[in-house]
Image (cartoon, rainbow, N blue to C red; front, side, top):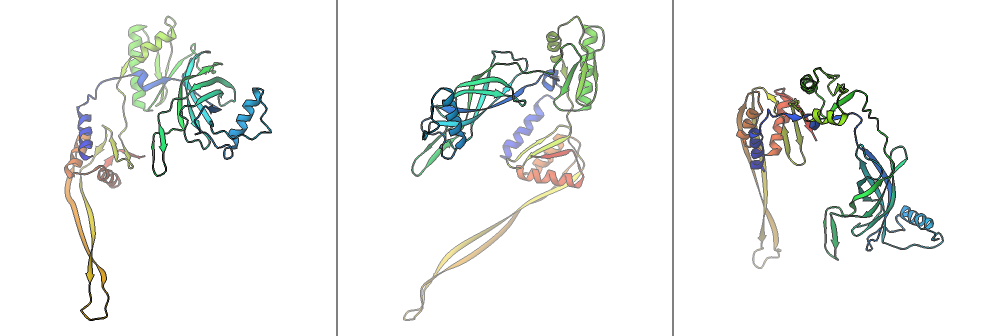
Length: 365
């Protein structure tokens, strides 16, 4: 793991850092966004892996209601099927989607079903937060995981109780949008930063002066840039040309740490003052050696088994390394000089931050 960590850091140094990024990759138009839909439905056709109706009352009630709408009276009967499962159906509606368009849906089990493999989602209405239905979903469910069990062993991969229906929902009503193509166009940065907003505004104005002979953009804060679309160009063509403009975004000095997986991501603008660091690890090994104690001949003693304990303590590492400089390369070189694993790197970075020698924000996930 330590070699892979050093290789990834070396690869970062080999990548170009001055290349520009397209505006559409770091910003989006306010009002042009996805909308989320949700619905409650039933999956049928399972091979005995559905909900237990005694334990999942809502599944039985939904099944009875569906059969009632089809003219089949089962209210006074007792249902014992295991081929039905209650599910939640979710979907994201992209912007500018019209009536009749198809979108993907995700199906997740609600009850105690063990698998949705082979199931078919019955027609389900999908509604927005306002309670209005905008789409209907139906179709065969594709499951990526599986589960198989015997009497003494069980094998599973992925999550067999969650699946996806490709193009399974049809838009029945357009989702209202707050976007106004006739008014000012506002770009919102995905990562808020004053310098990045200024660079985006300057790039757009430099393009507009060459293309239209006037400046059209103005940064409002660290997240938004407002533009005035010229009258002699359509909105789609205007946004296509603006989106391809190259900008060098500015990134904050930040270190992201994931202690569970041992992942450390260090930003290029991280600065560190001169500091001496040492890191050592104490390992203690305890071994038990059984010994047999026998009594003397013709004695009334008993043969017993005793244990001989050996304790060995060793401390590795402990060498000092001086890390100095104001660049990411100097920081990584100093950490590699000590020869740390990712867990040790995390501890060292947090200690340097506590000492006040690390001029960066540490984000622990």
